[in-house]
Amino acid sequence: MTFDLGPALLFCPADRPERYAGGLAKADAVILDLEDAVLPDAKAQAREHLVAADLDPARVIVRVNDPASAHFTADLEAVARTPFRTVMVAKTEDPSALDAFGEEYALLALCETAAGVLHAGSIAAHPRVAALMWGAEDLVASIGGTASRFPDGRYRDVARHARASVLIAAAAHGKAAIDAVHLDIDDEAGLAAEAADAVASGFRATACIHPKQVAIIRAAYRPDAATLDWARAVLAAAEGERGVFRFQGRMVDEPVLRHARAVLSRA
Image 1: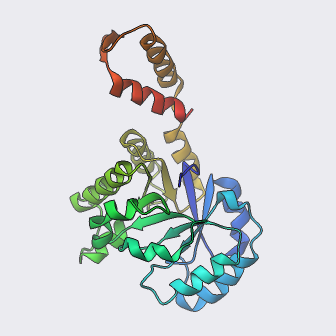
Image 2 (image 1 turned 120 degrees about the vertical axis):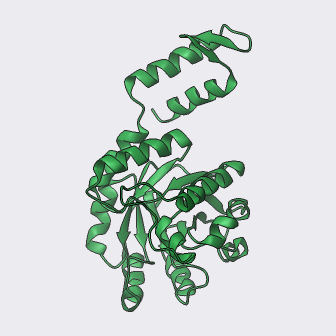
Image 3 (image 1 turned 180 degrees about the horizontal axis):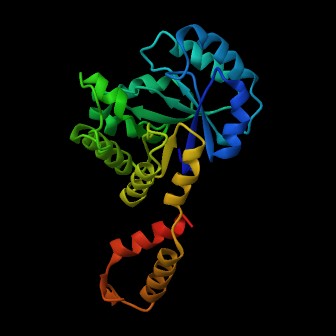
């Protein structure tokens, strides 16, 4: 399974069908959310809205409730009645629970609890998993905490550990990693810095909760002209070199060339 939807993935409550098309038009992909964005009493109606949706299935992700939830089976039955085959599984903890999905599905596993982060490697190894995503708020709640960030907006160490663990687990199994949402919608500078760090660290996409965040995420993932020029130039210079060489005052070896190729892949 491969992931090629990013970089800006916009959540949309599944019980708000009037927002579906607008969300998809604004973002690279829309995540129709049957889980936390929908109250329990509205979930059955949300599933019917999902079944009735007329959207490009290549750019739609459906977030289902976690496998231990009473809503999981009904969610799967509803998704099976749609053309949508990219599914985000909330609170994934046990990779064997993903066997409920057939081979036609591409799964984005949310590692957002202590057990999910701890088992991120085995979850990433599941053949149906295309990407891992992490979530700060559910994670901190699962271990009895009260806040994932300091008052200045920085993540606490436990959240940073989970973020890095999920990213490394995904990469170790050749899967993509998706960065968590930035809940402070008006903190555009904080989101820009976080998205830029996500790109530099190796994340393939960032999820968001408001359309105004899409442009900020896209800008962070898009290399600027100077960076693109450097990547093209260093790769061109490497064609005439054997092994390590010096370029613009810097030692260049294969890891640096891989960085350059990664830059061009986002152009």
